[in-house]
Length: 433
Image (cartoon, rainbow, N blue to C red):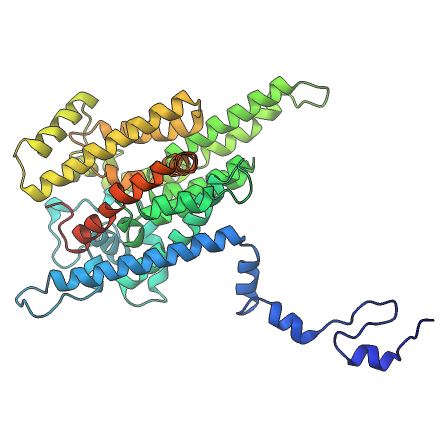
């Protein structure tokens, strides 16, 4: 015989079975199980998987480590005029290209600013995406440097989660590919640029989700994110080319599938138009510079004036870089930077070869275009930073290291220590000399 409790008891006692044996909801238990924070935070964290959270935890620990390196650097390289007063922590991040980004955000591309040296004013060589983001964040965060660091901090978090998800595509759940790929990126030699107020983190925050969208056949989203990436770096056009190749592979596979329900070729090719969208920001910037300067090639000419990025054959570029690395033509600080350029280019060429052997055509297109752009200047420049953008490098190394334990051991023992060396080199102002 079943006894039914009165309605007042079933509703008033949390966890007490109702009629039919269904427990009444316990508001206290619901509150305890809900993620901390407001509704927005709960909505965000609800979309994150345990792997995502693991990657973000590692990301925050590595940010703390780089901030500590910057703190130590401030004491190792004290402020000018005193060997007893350390430099300020924020000044450790105000290096090299950051100055250009701040000037663009603060004064625009053509307005003068204090200390301007007109013959060396090559601001137009930098795409507007990061300066626009910096100017927007600065409306809330008064300090320019803090605003730049905050952009990279948030963007880097998005990037590592997207990288981990890319590494996990087609892999068994829980095999560790995602966290491993994120760790390899975060401990890579040039990782300090993901923390600094530079473009790498913001570019990856658009580019990696764009590639993830392409792999899920969401071509409009991939194109929109690719266009956002192009506002940050010219490499967004290389990403668009990779997405177009990915689409063509899908179209070809659909054609081979056959069947009465197969779409016609024009219909299958219709999403290809989305791949043109990332070219729009580059075209708009070119027109803007043409209106202001009268020069259709203003961006390219600024690159040539400031960084010797005029065209040379790959053989010439290699010889010039080698001479500056080992020919005793430069101070030791500059020479070691050229040595790093050579090493990074060798990694890129090896990566491209592996991608071609395995017929990873879209990723091979992206890496090949990067190598061509970087390897046909007077000398190699910024190749170590560019390695951060080569997501096939980090996913491929992750998969390889899971098959061969010695790969992880070699990376941790030989490669990862360079991260600290290069972080100290950058934060002490000795990245190039």
